[in-house]
Picture: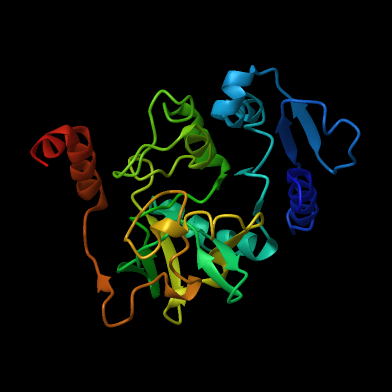
Length: 285
């Protein structure tokens, strides 16, 4: 029975507890927050009802972020009910610089709790990730299925590259080789959609045959687990998710996961090629 404001308030309190000093900007379209006490700056946008219903409000923050490009070391775009916590920040700080130097993106996994069995389930990953590579002595599992996680975080250099790209202005459309993202998803996928060429791949550190605990982020509204029950156990893959895998089941078993030695740029080129000419395969199907 909680409202959007309740999740927003909890999330702001959570973000203010992070060990890095931060400023929070909440983008909205009405006067609801005018009399609310929040440790954040509220930015109101003029937007017509048609564009609001389609989700275009999620794009409006980008003009402000452009103006702030030299003001911060890190930039985080976050949906109001995605609980980014200190453990997630430390996880990102631990790996992002080393991976970024090698043009890899550090992945996160969004989860919800099933109230029946009190277990946490992945929202977006509905098929076990089964490939890994090694960087130094660390194993990283490749998320080549769905790396959408309702937010993005980049350092200043990555953010500046994002600003210069056609993806920032939405001149190009994000997709993951199975479907195009919707309007709001295109805002929150950031610069690491599978069809984008900045990062070679999204990687998740493997610790004791499980994802690093810091990669898990809670979807606070917890409303997807029962939302798509008709698709469960059907191998259905969708960015909205069906919560078929518990978070400790996201990686394939140790004896089935495969080490890869590949040129990711070549793989991405062929995937982009096949995507552009997908109408041919559809014709034959």
